[in-house]
Image 1: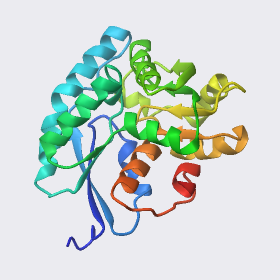
Image 2: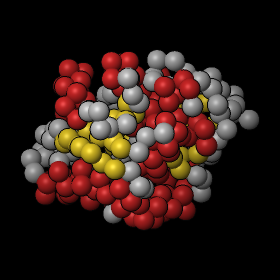
Image 3: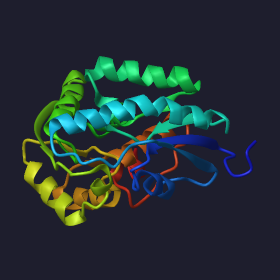
Image 4: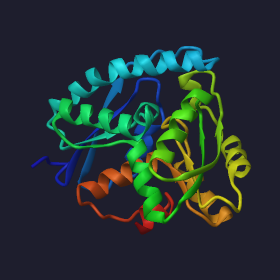
Length: 246
């Protein structure tokens, strides 16, 4: 039994440009659970168009398996995917194929943002949703397709079009708050944020108070999903209703 990870050793995959997902998930880590991080090599390239974003996704897909291989040697027990865009690609069927590829490569089960947010939406009883992302429209179309394949109605979405991968992490609470308010409405049951380098775990928790409905940050949902999948039912305050009540 691992001296520190005596309850669970998580492997955590995230892009090399991502400075948010690792501290977010460390903040949600219960005693006896350890997070072991491997970085997917990603260039901090300019992203000015859908074509640029799609090139970036291709690079991430190519380098993900190499980063996953590095985690196997620490004998992780479960993999937490801290990269969200690729986990939504090609609808629910494509997302399932991608998750299965990761499972087969690393030999353990996997939590990823697409299926984690789906499970979170079911847990809070939401059917009509709005979502925001740091992406470009081509990526939002993939996210929308996944949620619609899962049976949700996407009422509205917003892409914040961040100009480089690193600059996603520079997005401020004021910008995210404005985006939440812009996509929310009486016709929406829950608001979802995707993009693991967008810092929203605490803002989402606060937004639930002023909106009076679930606001699901992808990093919270993914870590919650992983914890519950391995039988860890600890409740944690400060990160929204998902971790404190479900």
